[in-house]
Length: 113
Image 1 (cartoon, rainbow, N blue to C red):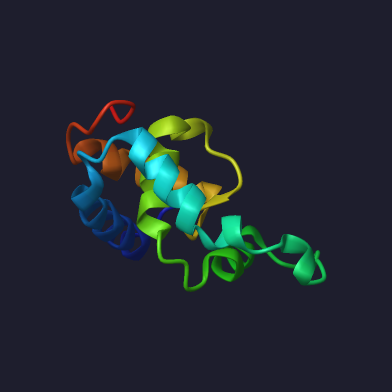
Image 2 (tube, rainbow, N blue to C red):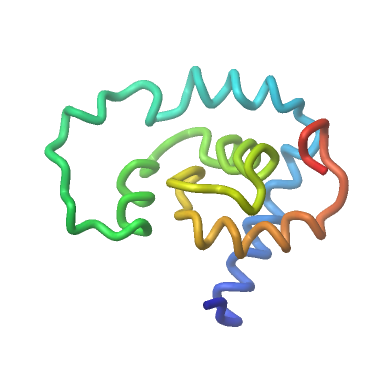
């Protein structure tokens, strides 16, 4: 359930993603694949913690990742409302709420309509 504070936070995230609006999707995928923390570390390095919520898992997996924005932009473009899992330091519920604000920001490079 979205709250006014969460809406303001998501609007701010959508606004910050504008810097990536004209970056081609294949370039975003290359950047995330090369520089994403989740792509360069072995998830088996740490024991699984089954008690983590999606939000806690997102924070842990993406903490300090240098390409959170690129990852989030790419996921919104490619999955839209069908997003599942953790991308761009946000769990899927937050990304679904973000999608409306992101779409209102206007056109994007291919795959980002």
